[in-house]
Amino acid sequence: MLNRSVAALLTGVLLTPVAALAAPRDQMLVSPAWLKSHLADRQLVLLQIGERGEYDKEHIPGARFLDFESLSADQEGGLYLEMPTVARLDSTFAALGVSRDSRIILYFGSDWVSPTTRAWLTFEYLGMGARTSILDGGLPAWKAAGNAVTAEVPPAATPQSLAGTAHPELIADAEWIQARLGQPKFRLIDARDPQFYGGLSAGSGTRPGHLPGARNIPFTTVTDEDGRFLPDTALQRVFTKAGVSKGDEIVAYCHIGQQATAVVFAARLLGYKARLYDGSYQDWTRRDLKVEGGVAPTKGALISTAELAARVAKDSVTLIDLRSDLNAYLANHLPGAVYLHYETLRATQAGTPGDVLPAASYAELWGRIGVRRDRPVVIYASGDAQNFNATFLAWLLAGFRQPEVYVLDGGYAKWAAENRPLSRLYPEIAAVKYTTDPFLLDKIEGEHVQHSLGGKELAIVDVRPADQFAGTAGAQIRRGHIPGAINHFWHDDLVTSNGVTVWKSVDELRAAYAAQGITADKWIIVYCNTGTEASHAYFALHFLLGYPNVRVYVPSWTEWAERSDWPVDGPVTTGTAPQAQGARSCSEN
Picture 1 (cartoon, rainbow, N blue to C red):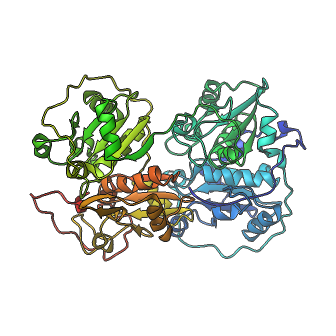
Picture 2: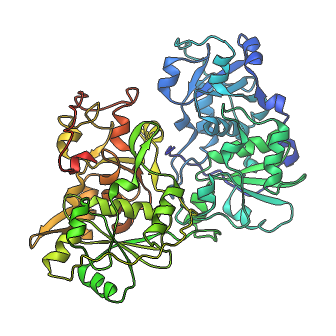
Picture 3: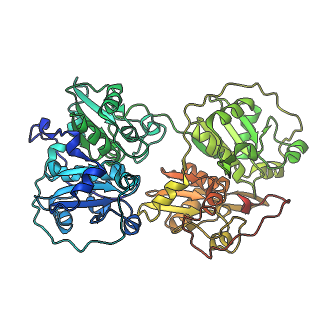
């Protein structure tokens, strides 16, 4: 999620005994049966967290909608999701009918476990923790128990007097953590997914890795697949595996301070002393503090024909021909180049064509064509309409953190136009064992795109031709584009010079993207018809311009168009069937 927020309430001072913060499971969680029997209680305040559209469609009778954005505030420095001022929180909750005497029940509409625990921590911060609980399993559990839902919105609440009191002892900041690193009973828990903890991606931070000495408890491991918190015995195993023992003091962090609240909540279910590092990894890395466990990212760049010629002469690169026509390779190719067809890089997944393969499949393929981690890889395509073949492979290799990956600027066409050496001989390739670890593609799933629509810090970039973006062309089952998307045709990043097609300069690329509001401070999602063209924009944005947060949506419009429950902007017409045969064009990817 990309919600913004902030607060100036972080402090490292202990004002009250933390042992008092622990609370039993039967106070922190309630069941659907308990809630049903207390729905008519006069002091009950029932709040749903999630998407507004979900609430408007159905909610538990009497529930009000709690806008998650109201739990955050802008702060100098650009941190996301920091605690707002007490006065602002008082105003927000009082307007929902919350008073000091209220019995507050929070629940999520669907899949919003960590935003719900974040809301719980916010009430804790105001001193309302003893009167606040979470409906275990949220709305799905309520419905599964056979209980009624409604779309009727209750009358506006009568504003109450809340007068909350801040409890800064629930929050840790960077200085507080630094003073305790290495202490025997201090446990620092990273609640992010393993790929972030393991340093494969920086996420919202500026560098990959984790805080010194941190252990990993992914926030998704403290609940079951239905969003219910694990039983105490199972939770204890999770914490014990992470090195937490009786009497330890826990501080949990994540990207921006949301996911970690689920771990804080779980720790408190077990009676541990637990706090949240609100600024989390984003704050730590912006302060340029020490991190551990980072995996070096791929160095991706363009390579000129002159530089490649020098490397080929020294036999110092693995050279891969990604042209879409095998016959063209057989006719001639760059000396030492091994052939790889783009269709070996993708396959049907769950009925949807054009998806990526498992890591093991790629690793076997890389080994067969002689890709080694200690040897730079140079990729070339035709250099014009299929330039994205090369960038797609570069994107895949970056997922394995292949140290150096280059794309030949101008491709085969420029090399041949300069009368450089060509060959018809096949290279002698010694197969190698290529490991599957690490592997993390800069990829985003369609479900995540759908949930991210409307994000303030997000730019969705459609790199297809303008007619497909407008919905007047395209072979997919629906035409149009993802709502809010910006059309930036991938081929516009190239220019024809001296009869060959090459990349525009970095300055030209930066100016063109910035003019459309596609800037480095945003999370960027690029998509096309399956993902290959999108990799071209990824290469430009991430490798050439240095944008830190760029993700490719695969299999892109081919999946989105078929999902009738996902929104589309444009005419939303039904696409015509593609021709059965013919040359592959940029519109097919």
